Image (cartoon, rainbow, N blue to C red; front, side, top):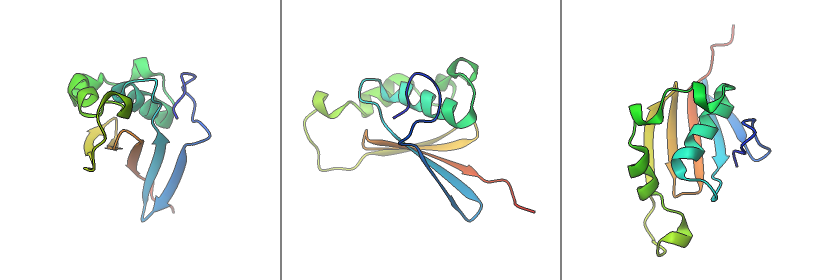
Amino acid sequence: MVRKNETAPDDKSANRHDNHISIHYTIDPDESISHNVIRAVAAATEVSPERLEPLYNVVDPDALDRLFKMPSETPPSSQETIVSFQYEGYLVTIQNSQQIILYSRAAANP
């Protein structure tokens, strides 16, 4: 979960594979998906959410929130929903209102 203190939470995990970094965040069901994305990217980039490019410059936050309504708000579905877009140097992938994965190219090691 990405908490409001804008630091990386305990349930954030990072993996390195082939010069790529992936950071996984569990979605906080008390916040909209768009707010979860902003908090996750802010934590990954170590900047406050206010300093990020507005999310609406890359994706419609209202549409994103409608697409990923929390399970208590919509009937169960057997279909998987995955959305990916570029934001603040990361490929942001949202999976089934449960997880946000940020993919970034790792700096090349000397």
